[in-house]
Image (cartoon, rainbow, N blue to C red; front, side, top):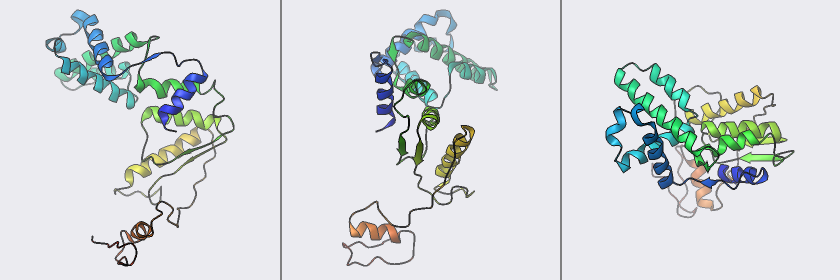
Length: 239
């Protein structure tokens, strides 16, 4: 299952599955309604009040802010600390629109960007993860709401496994795997803060990802100076 399906399971278990989900057109319409409700509080963005593309853009910005764990009050603080008056005005009005949007959807709609935070808050009440072994595979990193969900699951599950594709997790180098290692270290810190025991297993030495012999050979030789035998499914190393 992915995170969205986990959220659905938690909501259905806790009787919160009846809220109407917000799609992109509805989100833009609600942003428009939120902005218009602010009336004279909006001055800089007032010239965009009849621009449909502007509302879609603001809706996307709000979605990104939520994925980054930024709330309206956090944006307002950023506005207060902005270096230029223009940046302060833009951020402040955006925080007002964001807050008005949140008030509009409260108790009536379900914003997909809020699902993980709401589901994480409900984890304490649900028994879905009690005594379960939970696996997370195929991730290179997590958003702030996903970290909240992971933290909540750590509290409930008997064991949580998370695979990461990188070399030494604690290696301090700026390379292709530095982002993955940074997220892996954050997971470790998250677990320790929760009082959860952390065990780091050794890297897999045998290739299990591919069934085809040629792909297994290519994976094994990638990054080395050796040549892949052409007799293995016609696979050649060319770079």
